[in-house]
Image 1 (tube, rainbow, N blue to C red):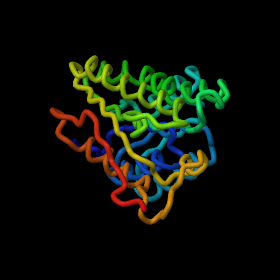
Image 2: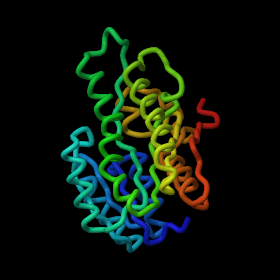
Image 3: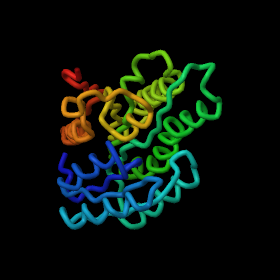
Amino acid sequence: MELKNKTAIITGAGKGIGKAIAEALAKEGTNLGLIARTTSDLETLKSQLEQAHGVKVVIATADISNQQDIEQAVSTIKNELGSIDVLVNNAGIAKFGTLVDMDSKDWERIIQVNLMGTYYATRAVLPTMIEQNTGNIINISSTAGERGFASGSAYNASKFAVMGMTEALMQEVRKFNIRVVGLTPSTVNTELATSAGLKIGDEDRMMQPEDVAELALATLKLPQRVFVKTAGIWTTNPQ
């Protein structure tokens, strides 16, 4: 698929994987709608991408877990950029602890951001894609959405749910020429991972956000008649 002059919305775009995907798409000439909670991150990225690649970038500050916030953000972006060809559901949070020890509010917050945020953004964008009879949705899940681990009950639950939603949505909307993809990276060297207490190890040997961005780009570039249903990406030798 030709990505030049297409439009993509990315959630959690200010840092990490979202930022790397924004940079990769901008290099392809894709116009961008960037959503995150921190305005300064978005403003800096907007300036960099517009100057370096000449694409149009619209930013919107929103809490992905708030449906009204995300609907307003999508509306703002659509009004500025028109059609929406790609949605990358990337925004997420992580916190780990045993089921008994983790505060129930933290547990609920992870579900609200990682699962409900993905749902809210998709629900806001999908009618436009159905009307266009084409579109691409990439949900950034995790290997934690494929296998559970001790202390990961909340995060596992959220990411397993994202994969289930991805599977169901794919079956719903493929008749509208909409491709729905679930990506499942293992641990990525991001601020989210380090702040959650994950062991990164040798940073030079760990998966970088740019690696996930390359995979996302590859799935989008496939001919429109086919799509990657799910794709995992792992660090080759982290130790």
